[in-house]
Length: 418
Image 1 (tube, rainbow, N blue to C red):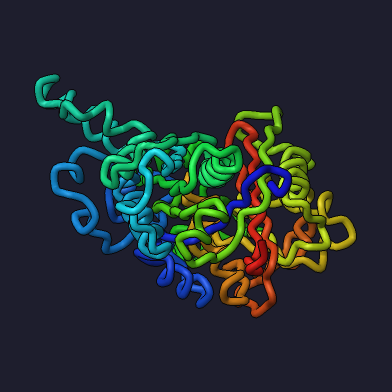
Image 2 (cartoon, rainbow, N blue to C red):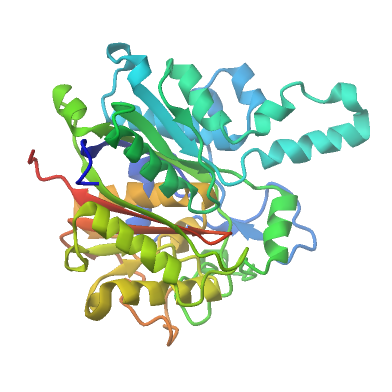
């Protein structure tokens, strides 16, 4: 995005994940090699082939919202509100000193309030229409994450909620950056959130054949790029980042953590569910991100992979990486944080961006958990099992979704230049 009139920096991060209720605790668990996957206890999985998931644990939405609003909206909104609050506090962003017309929110979700759909359908069948909550329809809407944050903080600038399946979080960040590059806002809180921990949602993913059935060993179930991988694991949570124009961040003396320098967005136009076998669309997104950043493959220090642990995705993504990096492919660390966090769906790209900022800040690359025996078709350096100390100046973040959606971000270390 170097050719546009504003540079975009990251000044705050926030997260609610299966590994922790904030960004620091999530990071510490991530680099310690811990897993957030466990047996499903929120409902009886019955005869579902998959009986494991990665739940957010110990979260109290009443610490972040008033009681009435907690009841009205879905958990994905609760998580988004908490992550946004953390990110704004981290950025030392005092909205009472900002023009509310120049502040925006861009929090996306893949599936929105699926739990409300199931709950209210059951009420309709057992108690009738007059028992249905009057807030049922607004409560399930995907834009309620962004709008609840905007209402809570009096934000009146560009507020929207992109939907791009499991690429949603990255699209939210990229689109927010573009809006600021074009002068539409000075600050945007951007990211993704999802919570689909319901019987119908898990059953639906299971019927796709997308989920691991390693129910007896949940912490080892999600095994990106491993020869014995048998599917992903559903996770939940949210991640938010405060994005600002460089001028605005410097004027208020904000802590600049990193810079969002590149964004690529493509479509495979191949299949509703399966990725393009050769990874062509993913490779185009990665190359777009590099070009918009004004960087080359020589600059890439780490790829935070989509790495879902499904048989098709991991091979396709590996091929895309080889296409983009060429003879550098074997030398660049590639890891998937889904082995630890599972697949946070619409929040996946955003939590990867949070991890990228933390990797740059700490000089540590998170590992790929449960990667023991490489697939012959997945033959890159996947940082197996143990976090790695490294100088990280540029990170490519991949996020792909159903429908052939491909998004790639490039985040760079902040050098303090102008």
